[in-house]
Amino acid sequence: MEWMIHELAVRAGVTRRTLRHYDRIGLLPPSRVGENGYRFYGPGAVARLQRILLMRRLGLGLPAIAEVLAEEVDERDGLRAHIAALEGERDRIERQIRAARHTLEAMLAGTEPGADVMLAGFNDLYRDEVVSRWGEHAFQASNDWWHGKSLDEQLAWKRSGDDLVAAWVAAWKAGARPASERAQSMAARHVEWLSEIPGTPTAEGDRERSIEMVRCLGHMYVDDPRFAAMYDGVEGAAFVRDALHEYARTRM
Image (cartoon, rainbow, N blue to C red; front, side, top):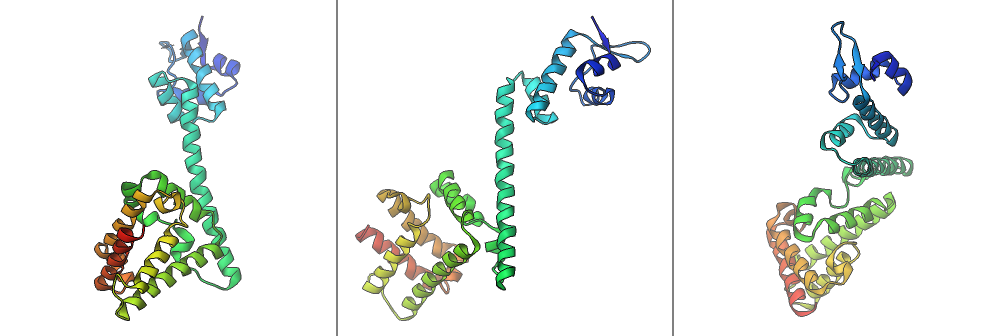
């Protein structure tokens, strides 16, 4: 039994234009084409169209449907992949919404937060470093925590970080030694500050990995110009590194 294109379109509740488009993109070729150019669809083509229409109702796009059919993947697996893609898109949109809300809040409050607060995540700039050193979980947990904050909370947390950096620089310029009580008090404050960030070993109470993280951060403050500049140059960053290393060695 065969159906001509207009017959199949009526029975399936689609347009002939849709069926011609499916043919054009290789998704549903007709079973045969007559000498007069008419398309004819047999039972196999009809069964394939049923699968296509089912997946369309489930929300899958045509490229995803083509992949499912080409690989003979179960519709459920195709739907799972589609859900994962939608969830990723949802997360991206939610971040944009939060950024827009923060910008509006800043305007209403008469303040002008930096672009990094309005547009970036907590550690987006350092994603590769965070993932390579402490895993995807650490990056995602800390980023979710950051994006969940209001504008005021983000600004307050950034101010606390700026205050911490300023205190380190003041201690270094005052001639404090890395092992001094002042420097070690600063190191304790620094580690406590890190423990506020979900996903970090310090937040999770993992002593061995916390020591490793503190030592790695100390080195990064010196080796990465972005961090060294925060601590008034390499010498200031080296002071922070040495104090953190001493704290990790003797007090963690």
